Image (tube, rainbow, N blue to C red; front, side, top):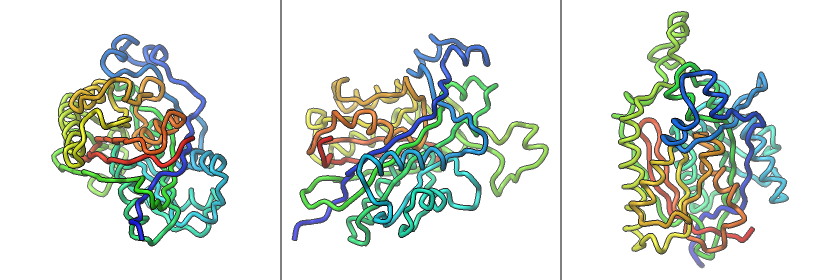
Length: 331
């Protein structure tokens, strides 16, 4: 009996309609299109404007897109993992609500939070359950309403982030396709450089924390950039070395869309041609847990069965890593 691997068999995505362009941001904070574009590669980002709608809305829409394209009966889904840094509520699992809303009544579900690496870690988790033979269909959703935790008077962070959702379905494969290897890491030193100070168990919400704007993302940009460049590139080259591969063997790099310069540095370390680097940061900015599935959705028609894909991510914590996956189908 051949070994069971965990393959991605379907992709879905959703982004809100409202486009927040660099030109609009320039009317809100002291910045301009050229400054943002040269430093980040971002031209615009999508923002979920409707009141009363959170990350679950984005994730549910992405899941519904996948279900429709795959012609999947939601009752067949065994498990739902919701990767997010912006859950709807602090205690009630967003995954449970999303699973119920899409009709995955036979699934158990939970949230996974590893900042911008949430979806990458979710891939590892989903694949492990599939490889163990416990479950046959696992829906991995990555969605974040980053606009809910961004200070739009802080030009260092408000230019970077956007809202969006993506989803993939993992199923067993016996052709040797799917997830091949992973290299995942964390370092708690990052806690000081990228965080939201208040709202957790150390500093609960109060009038003071709200007045001091401590419920928004704070980032030491230079430090985060330095760690991200070195660690994301290191993880990606490590995954090549472990699998006796070079850049020539890689068909696509699916890298977290945080900053074009970080993505370029990773591709350069891997000796990858620019044509192999999937990029949509100019359209969406950094959607945190949604960047990887949004890339897969945007480029799905170009992905061919057997393609060697390297995923890479870096996020707060710090969390980072790389995954090597063989694509399992032709669109």
